[in-house]
Amino acid sequence: MRAALLGFSAGVGVLQLQAALLPMTWAAALLMTAVALLVAFKSIPRRAIRLPLVASIAVVLGFAWATLFAQYYLQQSLPAALEGRDITVVGTIDSLPASVEQGVRFNFAVERVMPLDGVTPVLPRRLALAWSSGFFGQITQAVGDVQPGERWQLTVRLARPHGNANPFGFDYEAWLLEQNLRATGYVRPDTDVALKNVRLASFVLSPGNLVERSRAWLRARILAALPDKRYAGVLVALVVGDQRGVAQTDWTIFTRTGIGHLISISGLHITMVAGLFALLGKALWRRSFFTDAALPLRLPAQQFGVLVGVAVALLYVLLAGFGVPAQRTLYMLSVVALALWCGRLTRVSSVLCIALAVVLLLDPWAVLAPGFWLSFGAVAVILYASVGRMPPAPLPPTSSRWQRWRATLAPATRTQYVVSIGLVPLTLLLFGQVSLISPLANAVAIPLVSFVVTPLALLGSVAPAPLNGGCCWRGMPA
View 1 (cartoon, helix red, strand yellow):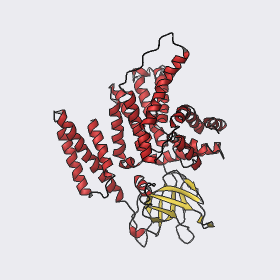
View 2 (cartoon, rainbow, N blue to C red):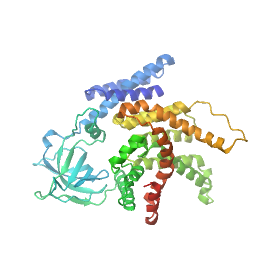
View 3 (cartoon, rainbow, N blue to C red):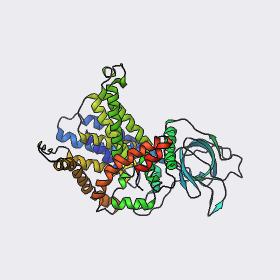
View 4 (cartoon, rainbow, N blue to C red):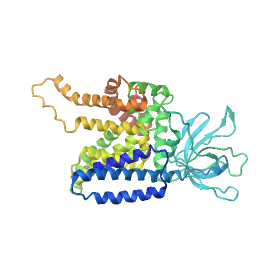
């Protein structure tokens, strides 16, 4: 299974290196052929022959799947004839709005398009819009107070996605494709049009809108509790995964010290929160929530704890914006939870391979993100350095307190050393620099951020008004 999963992932990666895509019909035929061959060769008894064949066919399968995925989303681009024309659309605010100079940026989910010259235009389902009060200091319109989940009627002027082709720069066009944003544009003034820019509904109920509105509510509570605090943007990044409020000077410090990976909702944060709730749920279920219901006789407490942990992890990942590190953690926790639920043991390498394949199955463009390589690379290095190694000999009862402390800190120190050294090649390849003080900075920052800052920030984001400011203030040193 691991050979097939790794082969599929390699095929997805190969597709991202191609200059052009295969036609959709060819890719579909290639996909069906690869599936048929994979099922047929799976029954070959000789392992030495079966593994290379299965891996090779899985590469073709991943390549064909990524091709079909890309062709499907590329076909949803804005028609060239509609560029630069004013079009009135009705839809919902589909993301956390980002405040910019003189306006706001947000994603817009199109529900309905008003006729243009007697014909209803066909637009992409999601747009990246900017709503500005004017340009070059001139005020031309008022900017609406947009919030996630609201339904608006807007007159917009759109353009097809495009970005700069600077070497080693951020590929904005690829990022838009990954986010399924197939047109960009801005809101036009409504002074000369019959259909005004107006809010039609304060909230449209749907799972996605509910998640985005919850993220906006948490962000607003943190910013209201910490007005004019420099570190408020960092706490927002830790709670809801929105990093746009972190100052560039702070990012420079985080990058130079090698702790930038902590200023987001990482796998460690999700695992910690899910584990705490799983233990709490298990303990309460074992005691039948202090009633006489005898709940453990209906469902074992361990299985209920597993359900609680996965549910909390899913909720936290949704609030985090479903980034690659969060996805990887959720899929790995889900596989481990399924194994515990079924009472089966599974190899950690298989868990990592399943998580890798699922991430690329749902988002083939994840391989273009540095976080993908750093996230899976860090876990792979940790597994290589820890799994299957002989544990240290137990300390004698007469050992001193210093010896017990040293034995406790030794595994964490070794893990930090292994990750710091193991990720040096990837860090140099992706960023062209590496922090020499990263091991020391992470030795302090990882436990501080994971076990002090993040829990207090989460508590402060939902605590009542008299308490939330104190939790957030203690959660981040000035």
